[in-house]
Each structure stands twice: as structure tokens, then as C-alpha cells.
Image (cartoon, rainbow, N blue to C red; front, side, top):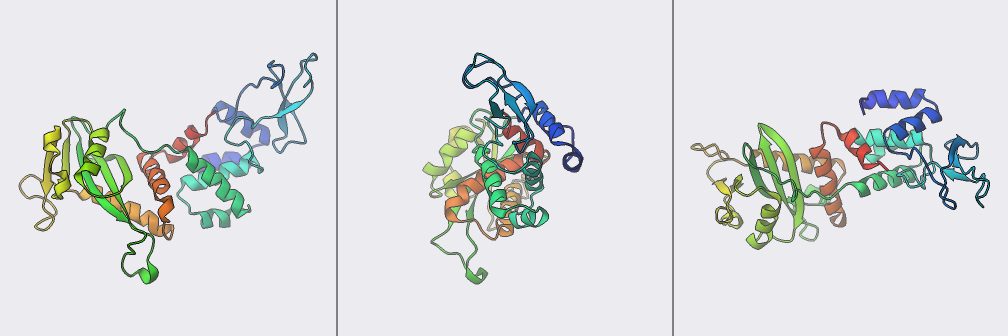
Length: 297
């Protein structure tokens, strides 16, 4: 898609339902052809006033028991079972791609809050769990930083950390002048037997890895990585070799800022939150396009 978010929304405002349908077909978000579910013959794209989309597929095979029956253009697409216009669905997705919170989207659109939430949940359900095992992080020319962080739902009066809702996450970032890719997942504990297999699965063997001096990372060199660490009790950047974990800590800060904006993330939603945030971060320069790619038929 060559349209910016603003241009896309302008197109939606100015365009007819048919124009929007044709664009979605061009973007492979709606099918360009549809075979009758009974006779398997190709149907005809035609106007249909009873449909919210004003168009449908229609079987024109006179020998078929479904002759002249209409089929929704949304069949077998993301838009199936969503009972608002394509225009409104896409407006919700555009606002989500701008990182607007649910309350803000609800305020800006005259739509039912439950409907907005249903659409956002459907989008998020399509986001893949971060996994670079087939296209690993690191390699020549890159530095990989690894660190753990604690995720907590907002404690009462912002005081302390409730032990009943704390979760630890392992974060891995790939750097070449700036952060290029990120990975994060929940971990049960910070032991080496938990952390090291994850790093080995996600990071290219032989990569440069920078960490703090947590003992769980001590065996990385034995696994074939070029491991260096910085002692945070003494300094944040090693004065001799420049080793630091500032990029992964910057990622932690952005992750926690997003949690704060959402006024917390419940314990049973943290896996989903991490996959959603990693997907956003890895596609932050073209987030809307990345979302629309998820919706392709």
C-alpha cells in the first residue's frame, strides 16, 4: 500500500462502498472471485441492496440448486461476522495503527465500544508470536543485548510490587547503530536452564552478546557466543570496551510506558501483550501495512 495513514482515511471518507471493495480486492483482503458453495461454479459480482456492503457474489448457474442465491463478499475474510461497514472497520484499524488507546478510538468514532473491542481483539489474534528461530537475531555486523525485566500490573497507590501478579520477561534486541529487531517472552524464572535455551533458539551462533553480570549468562561463551558483560554495580558502560545494555533497557522502558498507557496489563494477558508490542516494535516504521498484511485472504 502506497498510501499514508492520513491518505488512506481520506480515501475512505471520499469513496463509495464499491471503491472500498475494489481497493480491498486489490490489496488481497477480499477475494476477487468466489465459487458457488453448492455447484462450485464461478459466481458473478453484483449489486445487492440487502447487504451492508451493497454488493455480493451471485450464482448464475441455472442447473444449480443455489441458482440466483447471493453470497456475502466477506465470506472467508477477516471481515466475516463483523456487522459494521468496511469503512468503519478500516477506520478502527487505522487508529489502532496510530497507537490510539481503546478509549480514544471510542471517543473519535461514533461506534459501539464492544464492536470496536471485538475488531481489535480479532486483529490481535492474528499477530504471530515472536519467533526468530528460522531467521535468527544477530550475526556478523550486529550486537545482541539480552536482559530480563519485571512486568507488573499497577499496584495500589503506585506503591511497591505485588508478588501475586509479577511476571518476568526475557528481552533480546538486535542492534546495528539502532535497534533493528526485538524478541520478548515470559519466563518462569531467571535460571540458566530457562534462559540459555531461549537465547540459543533465537540468536545466530557465534553472535556478539552483551549482558549484565547475572550468573545465568555465564555459560554463553561455552555455547559458542562472543559474550561480554558489564557490571552495573560499578558502571553502566564498560569504559574499556564499551559493553553496555542500554539499548535493551531502552526497549524495557518503552514496553513499560505502553503498560502505563494501558493502566496496567493483567497477568493472564501478558503473553498476548508481549507478542503485540514486539510486532508493533518490529514494524514500527510501517505498522499499518504490517497489520493489513495480516488481514489478507
